[in-house]
Image 1 (cartoon, rainbow, N blue to C red):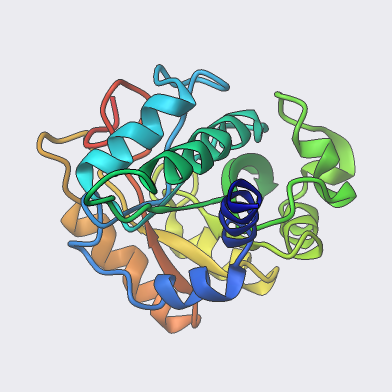
Image 2: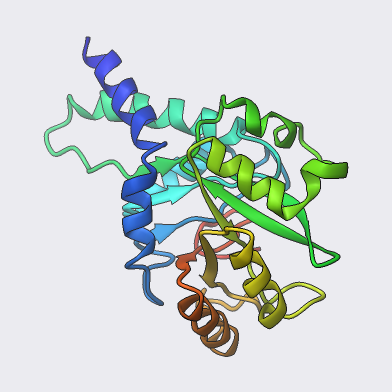
Length: 237
């Protein structure tokens, strides 16, 4: 029974969009990478970490919450959740068990916006929902389901939150992309992002100011993440 309860708790928390939205409302420049990290890749897309290694590092760092956002895949998330629920169960027998971080469902989806390719981060969704099936096949989709409007709609249909990733990395400026994404119903933007891959990780000041200002003007949520592709959650590469 205890194993079932642990599993139920872990998997239900992963789709708790209400709680995650409240966290996004309080995210600030110091939130990442030691408290929260909502942009992580594993070997299930183009990262180097195994999903289990992500969870181990999240626990060691002391993260309160995080998300694995592999490109067009939730396989890394599923493996990480299984590892996390087993870790929670095994910690019941330790003298001083650590507090488990919350792992939300996550995925990064390519989409077309104003004629350019952008990335939309999806969080706290039902990974089995049929609306997201076209986006879980390991590759960029085409035709109507590639449009940003449809991606955002699909994330919402699955109960999730849609975020425009690293808005200052595209061929069109955030001053063009964020207003259009807001018009299409995007929930938020990745406000805190390290565009130059600095060490130690820290959000880029100029881009952060621009993106935050636009997000506030359009009533959007703020998120943060290292966009880890390498072997450390404290760095992008």
